[in-house]
Image (cartoon, rainbow, N blue to C red; front, side, top):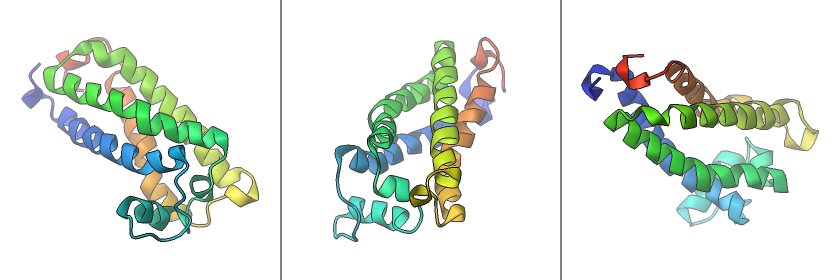
Length: 161
């Protein structure tokens, strides 16, 4: 089915194009150990500081396991996002299984592990600003789950949804 007959896929194209950029920009800094604990003239450092200083102590001072999570987001997930966007545009059904794997990983790692720590974990990592935390992070869980629903049946590009 041509892309013009799959309007929801346009939504995924836009969102995963944005995810490619935002994941690489925001998650690269903690993965590489860049200090963003203070405001900075560097735009990327300052943007991460603005988000994390009053919202995300786990992101601000990540333990090793969290740096692995941000590393996946900065260096692995963008590769999938680019392949997904190309597959959506071209209608390549073979992206179905990688989409299911990706969405399951995101729901587990981000939805359970990161959200669990930020809301129910050690006191030093609990978010002091749950509204801002959810506003920035919930789309990274909900949209992959929506992608999982989109890819639930064989030949996803032979139907609208």
